[in-house]
Length: 388
Image 1 (spheres, rainbow, N blue to C red):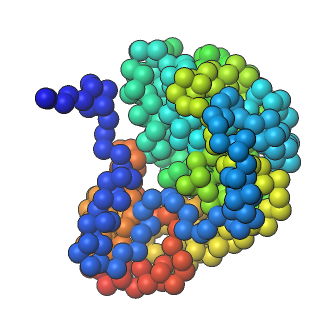
Image 2 (image 1 turned 45 degrees about the vertical axis):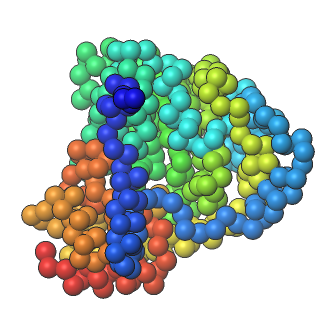
Image 3 (image 1 turned 90 degrees about the vertical axis):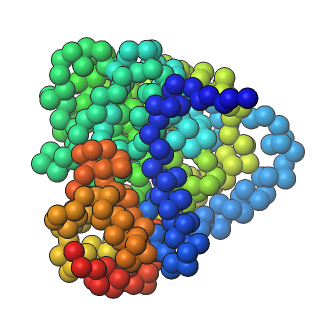
C-alpha cells in the first residue's frame, strides 16, 4: 500500500523546534555535553502548591469524564479575576474559553474564521503555528517583517492595499518571540484602528506577558485599549508564567463572537481540558504570585549573565525588557544557520537560527534563558574559544 500525505501536509515546512531537538539528541548520542538554549521550555519545576492542587483534584471521580465545553465556570472566573487585577480589563464568563495550551487555540482559530483565499497577516520572524494554521485552512500567508529599525513592530502602513482588502486575520505577539520586543501603547492604538477600518480580526498572543524585568514597566494587554474587544481576542498561557508547559492549559479571551467561534471549533475537535488540570490552574491564578516573582528574578539574573557574556565576546546584543529570550546579532560573515551549526559542532551549544523563524530573522540567533547561570558561564567559556 502506498501512503500519500495530503497536499496541505506537504506544504508544511519542517517544524523548527522538532528539528532542533533532533539535532540535540544526535549530539548527545555522540557523547557531547550539550548546553541547550534552543526550545523555550522552562527548566524550572512547576511550583509545589500547584502540583499539590492537581494531586488532590486528580482523584475526584467527577473529573474522570469528558470535561466538554469552554471550561469550568470556576476556572473562567479565576481568569476573569486575574485579568482584572493584572490589566484592569473587565471580562464576562462567555468572553473566556479554556484552551489545551495556546498553541492549540491559535492553531484551531483559523478553522473558525479563514476561508480559502483569505489573507492572514503574520509577524516574521515569529511562532510557526501562525503559519501552519493558515496552510491547513487554505489561507494566504502575508508576512509582516519585524525589523530593528521599527522596534520589531510590524509596519501596518507598508502592507499593500490589495493585501489589506483580502485580509481576515492578523496575529501579533508581545512580549515577542523571538525578538523579546515589547509593544508600545501607540502601536496597540494604531492596530485597533487598522483592524476596525479594514474589518480584520486581531489575535494577540500574550504568552510571555508575565516574564518581564522592570516592575514599573510591565507589558500591556491588547485588551486594555479602547475598542480592542470590538475587534479581537488575546491568548494567554500558564506554561511560561507558572512553568506548566507540559500541563497544556491556557485560555483565549475578548470579543464574545470570536471566542464563541473558537469554542465551536474546539467542540468538534477536542473534548475540553482535563478538569483536574483546570483546578491546578485555578490554584495558580488565585494563589500568591510570589512563585512568578521568583521565576522573574531567576530569568533576570540569567539574562544579565548571558547578555554581559556575549557583549564581552564582541556580540551585538540588546538587553531584553521581557520574555525569556535573547535576540543576538551574529558575528559578521556568517549566516544564522552557519552560526548555529558552529556553536553546536565547536561548543556543544544548542541555539535557534533567526532565519528558522522567518527570513527577516536572518542575521540573528535566539537564546532561550532556560539554562542555569553556571551553565551559561560555561557556555560563554566555550564560545570564547571559537575562532570566527
